[in-house]
Image (cartoon, rainbow over all chains, first blue to last red; front, top):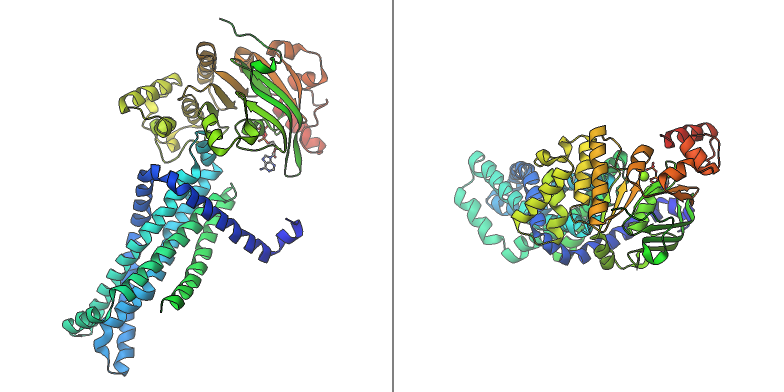
Length: 255
Length: 279
Ligand SMILES: Nc1ncnc2c1ncn2[C@@H]1O[C@H](COP(=O)(O)OP(=O)(O)OP(=O)(O)O)[C@@H](O)[C@H]1O
Ligand SMILES: [Mg+2]
């Protein structure tokens, strides 16, 4: 490519999106081979899950509590506080659960994956695997990509559960709503297909996007400490933007 | 038993045959028509000033990097055009010692050495354990089997990497600076190991190193690379006394000579010249 053209940030941005797309295809191509390393995949699921569990649970609790407070106030204007459980659950399942979990995982596990792979690149470990006739795409990249795909919906479910627990804590225990109304309205309105599954699809897509970006940034990080640091930052920035953009698009198509 | 010291090796006899290799990395011309032949069963040392592309040459030999032009044949296979699968097949028969060890940080010393075996051979755990411990014993680190790479010194890490490179008993081993950071005892041990592997198992070895004394003990022949070309080749003792400007400069440590070290920056080049010619 023309050197001057390469320097243009817009062209560079588009080019790196293209690179990432090609990388995605390569990772998909390596998936069948990476089934041999299913142990490695399990280990990575455990890493991503365990790493993010505490932060996801804490944030879920607080988000649920804040939402209950805010929505209680709003609903009380219309005299509809009985719907609190429903509204909290719907916002969590359809929107906040998948999105906030994805943002948290990008910041917690995504950065760790980028830094880890970047350091493996910088210390020749990826080349060493290649020299031992082990494809680093299949052994390193694919398992981490799969792990994000698997862990994200699980973590989002934990987030939702904690959020509803937090909402219950504030709505019923603190503000004195009727326990039966809280749960009854929620269970009768929230639909498995429209709400829970839609949210689950979202978090699966986010899981793929976040782990693809994290793995790609690590894999292509310049082999210096500075390069790895920049790539780690980029993982958070790009993931956040892409998560929110995808969220809009998916919501538009689902509703 | 002695191993024939071939001056250049007849092509059919060569395990590694490099023809007219041309490579440009960034703005720098690394190889400009390099010719190299490594006879089967020999220990060949590759010397040259720092930054001439010795590591790059090893990367060409293993297909980690494709040259711009030229032919690289290893064991009769043209590396530059091999498919990925065939390349991996070839690499299973090549051991490679990285300049900076490149141990996998997630695994213990034992698992690092066991890694290639676990990936490519379905061995019973007992046998695998024996093989790994034998290799670790050979580099004197059987006692360190449970340590993690972060707990090793640089010299120990290099020996572990060496054990990993030989765990498959390959036909060809490429050593990128195996002697750096070794104490005299470990260095002798590694020297003996390289020689044993070569003499008893007939493993061909290519050795990138700067340590002339060590090279004289193991190498059958030395290739001196400078300016992207092979400038001198021969048995180490011959080469040291050979009276060509290249060898005089390189082995005599003269700052002035035909090798303009690195970029045209006179003072810096002089400094590098001394660094590259450690006796
Ligand atoms: N990816 C790259 N892009 C541009 N230049 C490179 C690249 N990799 C290596 N080089 C250059 O190629 C030259 C040869 O590098 P190489 O690592 O092969 O040297 P070397 O002979 O192994 O040196 P040393 O003895 O210090 O290990 C160096 O001048 C280096 O700057
Ligand atoms: Mg080198």
